[in-house]
Image 1: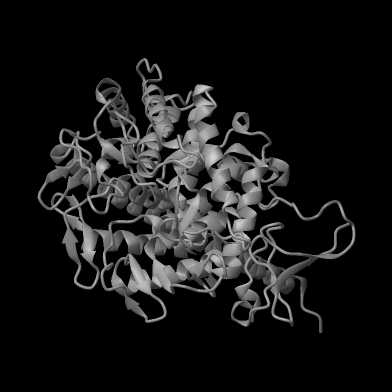
Image 2: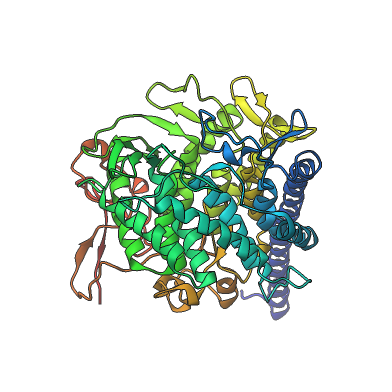
Length: 582
């Protein structure tokens, strides 16, 4: 017997009701999840905001206009002349600081939306800051902290779309930056073009000054000095930085590896062991970021070769050890906290899986100790006996932000929450935030570094509130100062930054919100116009005959940076991607 029409009608309406009810419940559940996530972001961003102002207000109360805050004693230190000066040699007698932490905080104030305080700081610096002081400073540290802070803040101050400054701004910060850049030029007066690591801001390079510098020290100047040239129209700042970078690159070994320290007069290496940590880290970072900022293919070619070499000779699973630049033989098996920037760099080249793998290992170490120790001996599974400290470094927070921007995986917000909670639990004191002297006892040290406000707080805030990035495309310097990616600054805009090539951007709305940390650079440099099938070696991995570097699973191979496609592990144990190009 067939069911009656009325029965069919009843069942039809019942089924329709169930579908509507189920859809409604699902939508309500999804809305609830979205609401909870938005509420969580709001709560955490406010928590980070309070962290920043606890550090900033205490600096302004107890240390300003000196360089940095000593939070335990609520006093100050004029530390610009001490940065990188491990032996505290040649300290000035009459130096009273350069408001270093205020300069470092300028872009963070804009990120947090405090335009009133930003404007007040700009006017104070315009009227009071001078570099005509008898103080010996680190070229590298002064470049990334002071010059970078001033250049970035000038760009923000002149942003016609945002109007962060309501008064009459007449390029005062740019004038200060140019005065500082002019003083930097003294350091480059060497037979090699490699700059001295130390200069006196008033008198230039001092007699009998050391000729030793680091790879980072002479290879991480191009962003700030290049931006200064673009803003002033005077090419000399970029020219000397570029000459130094080219000389440094010419000193690489046949393996495309560079050492850690060198002599700027002789043009010879002093320390042959190298890695991706202290003394070298920002060299790699500035090659890829200079390519993004200025569009010069020369930077990509350098980075591509250097990155291949890192993956071949330093990488061991998710970790990166150090190796001799001449032989590629492993030297030191250790984790250093500065290495935690590397996953963020890998996001810029599209190697997302590899970035995630290393990031998770760093976070496991963070969870184990509560913070990230300065140095951990991987081969002995123990802390370095003399480097057990954590000076409020930002690198893990930085990579967490990049990975979240690239993947939108909420797990990274959980990582950020853990970092925030640890900082508040272990380092917050009445007078600010103090560095950790020993991670095994959480004994504190009386120092609040300026990069805590310039980077650590900024990256954590952007993780939970990225409204500053909406409609903008910035790259961040190694000190966290934003520089905009502009067509006018490019020799040729990389294809990855033109809308037609944003294959992973789903809508125009998303494209407008995209930033340099979510737009992976994937230049198709290896196709060569061919139309046959062939093997592409990615920027993330080359075929390697050494058994300890060969892959065993697809997950070890990550994402191909020339196509942004997932790589696979072949039967022979090599990572790669077979392309058939129409």
